[in-house]
Image (tube, rainbow, N blue to C red; front, side, top):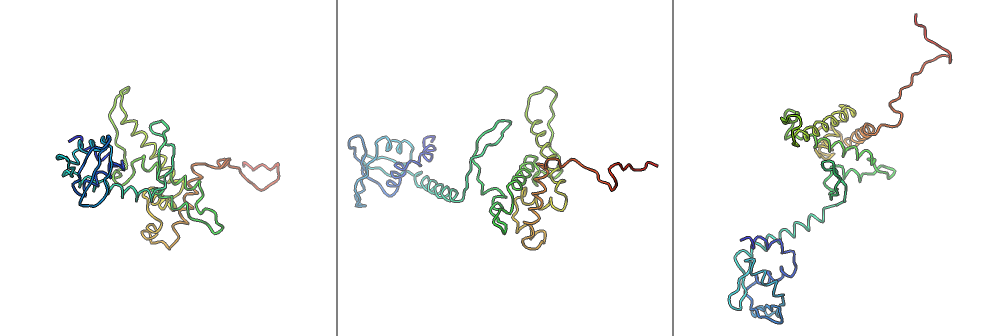
Length: 274
């Protein structure tokens, strides 16, 4: 049975798939010819097909085809195996047509690793295509990056509705010096929640809602407008303001924290302390 399970993984071999389809169509006569196997189905009126002997032997050992004397026929698992293989091929073809893959570098437990990211799954991917009247991007790159960062902290903090009944992370009991990673993960989640809360406060209650809906809950702009009963095309305006505010929170402009005082008076003016 273990050999039968290994056969579907090999169905990406075009020669093997061709052999199995030929046998599935009906029993075939076989004969050896110079180290190869010739398959011929007299009723089909087609010429003989040549396959390597090792390939035919693999099909036999996998349990997908059977041999009786000089006749090769389909075994019971063959039909379902071919159906699964063809369905998988169709699904992969469909997915490849709707993927926009990009190689990115991600940090996993302190280590930087390369990974493939499907840009079409990002809630902000479609927004990157929106243009302003002058042809420039409606959402600047720094605004979209800020939205992605907000969504990342949302998920790292486990703030999705499935676990937000109390909005409190689960803690692990561990004594000092004890090895383990549960507490470390909880600390990372708590740090992400802190960053998320600060970011939401920076946007303010008027703007944070639409940013969280789109960046964290992955809602479309039309859905946000319908749920909040907003006018058409108003969500993208508020989202743009929210993400620009969020970008300034993540990367404050130089000197923005410095505050200067102003007064009316001469240069040597001093206020009266009386």
